[in-house]
Image 1 (spheres, helix red, strand yellow):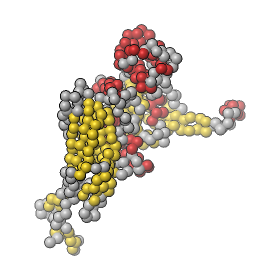
Image 2: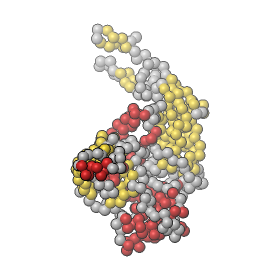
Image 3: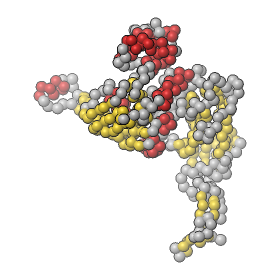
Image 4: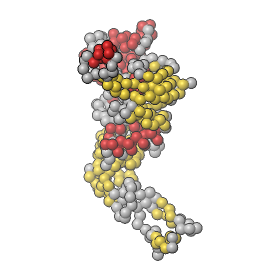
Amino acid sequence: MIAVVLRDVCKSYASYEHVWDRLWEVLTKTKKRHERVALHPVSLEIPNGQVVGVIGTNGAGKSTLLKLIAGTVRPSGGEIQVNGHVAALLELGAGFHPEMSGRDNVYLGASVLGLPKSLIDRLYEQIVAFAGLEEVMDQAVKTYSSGMNMRLAFAVATAVDPEVLILDETLSVGDGAFARKSFEKIIGYRKAGKTILFCSHAMYQVEAICNRVLWLDHGRLVMDAEPARVISAYTEFLSGIDGSGEADGCPARSPSIESPARLSAIEVSTDGVVGRELRARSGQTDLSVMVGFVSDPSLPPPSVALTITGFSGWAVTSASTVNDGLVPERLGDGAGEVRVTFPRLALLKGSYWVNVFLLSEDGIHVYDQAERVAEIYMVQQGLEQGVVSLPREWAMGGAPPDRLRGGEQGRCGFLKHSDRYHRAP
């Protein structure tokens, strides 16, 4: 069954240079407006149970697309069909009244979502317990911190069991333990076979969660395909337009004291030399990264990951304990330490950055991160081009291949003679 259908759906907004231009347009039938196209005509179908990521730079039309599907914005043209109950987390807390109590706002927010009072009565205790705000529900929302406001809004929006869940930059909200709890709830919807659409700048999470990604640019659908293919193209596009790539890595996060886990120490070394600015020789130097962490011992051990990025910010390679099937060991108080080593680092000449991440045990939710903890300046012998020297084999006619490890200097040279290649002496 199809959950969402869009047929030539588009959205434009009209603006006028002068306040009287709108009236003049009505009276004279003369067009005075300026049209800004937020979304060009797009057609697509989303089957039940599919998790769809929506990516693109700011102003690409991502939020417009989600608002159209959620029904909070009307299309300028085309047809939208959504089958099943929809829950949308577009602007958390936007419908709360600051003068009303948390209790009253639960009923207000839930009624906006279309829930009858009888159902809200049954769900109220569950909503409050999930938000963890039992002691302040009779206080005015204007006295809440922004984090408390988000927690209550998230608890209200996800209290129902929607067939279609729409998220706009809201994979997790709040701080510390609540961020993990909210993220686990969203993953629970995914495991239950719910249809999920979300816009995010966190490419790592998009690829980990989604089975389809839409890439929008200036209101147009650029790509609609499997995550790895779209994200690779989009990352290359970003590298070309701004040379940073930072906006679409793992989301920047400052861990709170309540965070389930946080980084406690990072040490980067090349051949035993520790530092933040290090030199290495391609194919000869060992790169080692030590990561220390502290975590909540009542939760599963966190996972550790790192990326090595080029100077443009584009990830050259990555490694994680989850992908390699490892579970970090830790002491009874939740402290732990892991070390990863790249023997005979095969990167070619240039500058590279090391970035470290501490994530949930499934490697999806980011607890803490430290970007650009060390710069590695690579030097090399020879004139190889690119970013990495790969192991390779050469074959001469019918002779067995000569193996050459990437970066090695060997006797595998060649002389050209009579349009044939012969092994050099």
